[in-house]
Image 1 (cartoon, one colour):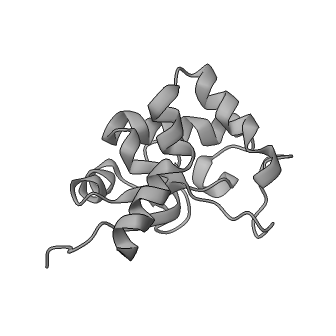
Image 2: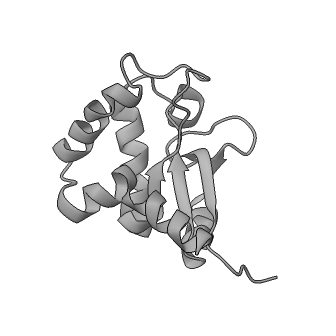
Length: 129
């Protein structure tokens, strides 16, 4: 059945970089299918989906998806309430660390704005209108 609207797969990781538990990390084929339906992939911040305990591990996963699908199909996909263990200081107040890690990898301008929140806002607007 074709999808009528874009959808979000949040709290996930990338199988090519990290073989996480169960279905928590997505194959490249599944990532491409999500993008083909104008969906959004929200990268989680915890070690089981990034295979790392640093901001750099999260940035690597985000960048992988952005390069594979384009920056319009990736977003932040983690809890902000302490529900999972994340790198030290990476809460809502510390998101600048992730912004800097992406910028250091060459992500800037429109692409950085898309990843850091504009994609999620766009998808919500589409779904709610």
